[in-house]
Image (cartoon, rainbow, N blue to C red; front, side):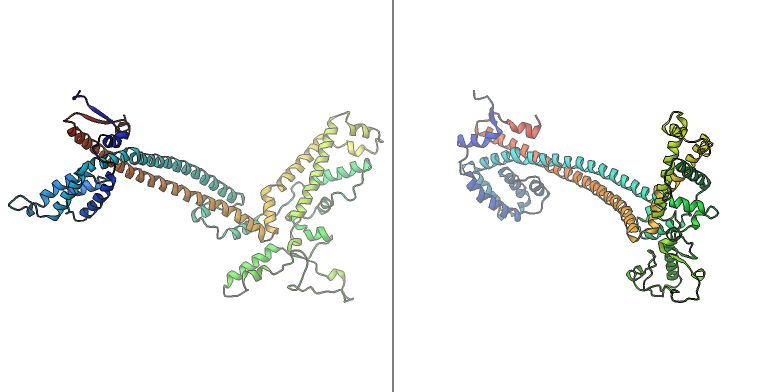
Length: 501
């Protein structure tokens, strides 16, 4: 029976020692005084690698550490040993006193058992939780890095897409990552666009004449229809780009054209020729009215000939300024009217072709009731020619209704607000890309920091586990001596925590 090993559960170790009267319940009170003495004694320790290793490798200095330190002091303080074998060193006296206080009523056993339980139940699990949390932080940082990378690539794609949309040089803005000249570049691109011409004007005129003839035969009024197409087809000998908004509004061809873009270019050239000329601040320049709405105010004075009887109307100079000086297909408003009229004409040709293909169509039945002489001119138009007209009109409509072209028209005629709107949109894409690149870099740095933290925690964890194992062995040996050398095993949770079994 005396040879049977003693098994003590690690969670019940302190309770087991107190119940068998190996240490008193009030051991903690004595330990507080001892720990104060240890703190004072540590300050007076000599510089020694072995002592530093003991102090650095232990989170809690216990009785067994004190015995090791005393052994080292016997070597470092051997010069203080007298002929009787006693040491006069105060350091040795202090540590002997500490060990003596520990051994009174076996206080050291209660403290050591308490430390071991703290290692097992709190310190080691806490460090492992921190390591797990940090590892999860690395995974989260990796996920965010991938997400930020995708967002940065997407915003870079949208950034280049916007630049390409406006015909801007992607490489310049990509290298500089600045949009200082964007507003000027947008205006220059708008100015460099060629004027729109109607290459299929003859087909449009034929289709329009056909519409009027057809409408006349069925009794439909067409006096108020297609006013802009009428104006264009009446002036076949002129280029469409020569017909201005002013002529569309007032029915007269202007003698002088002052488009707003021309005024802006002149302003820039004057400023570049002599940068010493002071035109005032930008706000003052922006407030100058260049008659974009056709209404002259204080800045430009109109000479009135109304009160002079001997001046003929023929001698009056007609001036179109601002948006009224633009060609009808270069102004968003008149271009929109043109497209609306063209779409009506296209729809008409669609229905006519459909009716011509169907011999029993409603229109065909209706026309059959009209005198043959009256519809002769309508029926002689071959179906192939109607299709040719339709194709020409559709191609013209698609060319003029191109979204990029309409945006450029709006850019030329609108105020600064649209330029600022484009600028803000492109700048937003660029800033978002830079932002996500920075966040991506921060995620990489966080991963690096987490890896360093894990390395530090793992080192600290191994030190605590090693200290707990040594403390376990010391306790088992000390308790074994009290039971005449019987084997003592501290078991239970300690095996799972320290040994993973």
